[in-house]
Picture 1: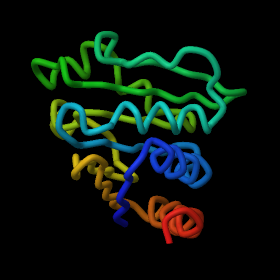
Picture 2: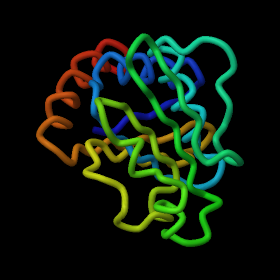
Picture 3: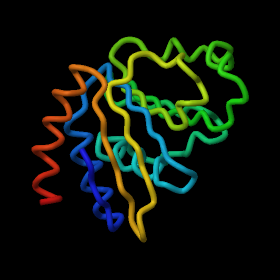
Picture 4: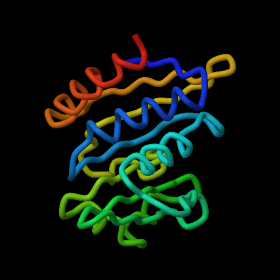
Length: 157
């Protein structure tokens, strides 16, 4: 799926649809250059999932955890990884259990250590806006992508 986001309102609309489409035990990786909007998109998704208060960028902490009721959500930013082995040193494999939802920026810094990814989201600066491509990587991801398409058709067609 491809989307052109001209404004922050477009980003928020897509984030709302994503938040309504994903499910527990879901992993999303986000690719794009610095400033492409990865963190902005994740923040908007988190707001739409029900996170209140400050939503910090995980640039320096590497991971920011959130809990909504009994749902754990983790936002990773691996930009500062110097070696993939840091994944194990920081105990990140433990975050991918018990139905959590994980968003991972700069996933290439962890090589193949990330568990099975459900969606890959590629962001690209496109004029004054953003071009976003969402690729499903699993059967569960396919089902959620179908839901996203139905929702996003209201905003983007």
